[in-house]
Image 1 (cartoon, one colour):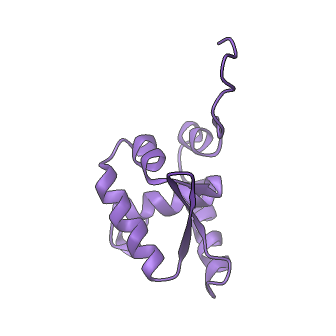
Image 2: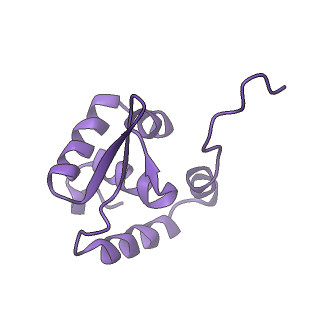
Length: 109
């Protein structure tokens, strides 16, 4: 939907994922959208170079979030939230819901 605006479907996917979940790492985004990991990594690197997102290491995992100091953040989040309204209910529920932390070791399934 926003591919023409952002220039890449993978950039749109990364931004929508971060807007819906608050933070994420490239593998989770690529797995969620069933796309190539390298394409997501490139787009996140471009967004970080532009100051839109920031990353931090948590163990060996690089987590990405929106840069709270980016001047157009509120407008971007409003646009992404509006775009999410046009997604089918099932896709929107999958994107906004789901497990965010791993299960405790030894916990029965």
